[in-house]
Length: 151
Image 1 (cartoon, helix red, strand yellow):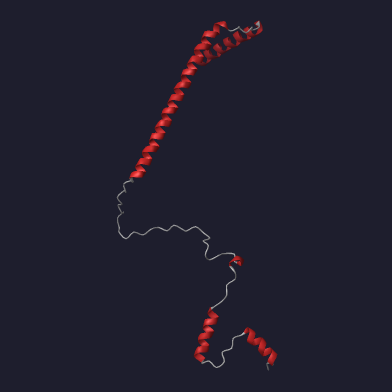
Image 2 (cartoon, rainbow, N blue to C red; image 1 turned 60 degrees about the horizontal axis):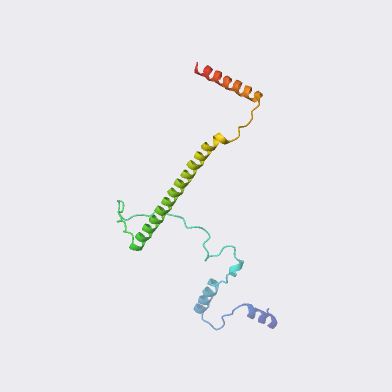
């Protein structure tokens, strides 16, 4: 049998339905058995309220057999203005690029003209006779090789 101190221990841990009808006891048991305490959220590996995966795309089912024709929505006035401003900015950048390239081209032409003028006044490099002979031999060898390729 159960002694009085043991009975007190049981009363701490168990709920006893004394003096209740059997129907109330069964309802109470169902209620208490359906309730369970979940562990704290921090101790779970996977949280139910946090989406763990990206949603999977599923094909959309259409109610009609043919393809739906949706009329394009005309862009709003602020969107049109913004596009026009962007176009103007791009046109201005393109014009600036063209001007820069033209300036670089003019500067290059001027530099080439100055170099052509100063060619006559530059000191000539002294080439030894050995190098000249080698250059002539290499030129004649190249000419002979080209003739062979043509035949």
